[in-house]
Image (cartoon, rainbow, N blue to C red; front, side, top):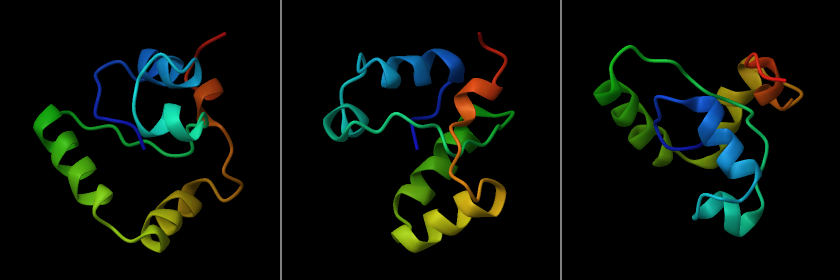
Length: 80
């Protein structure tokens, strides 16, 4: 799960190309398997903070509810 952003396509591209430092670059995590849209950046950041403190099983359940195959959702965002 990446950081809250106003430009998801750019942010995921940065992670896929290992431009952005951090966990995804260090561990070579390049798939976008889950994201949420929020109208308010404060709400998005609060939600991200909460999810980061969940146990892994809860995060997996959240992903599998809408993306049981763990498909890369990046290519469905209207790019290339």
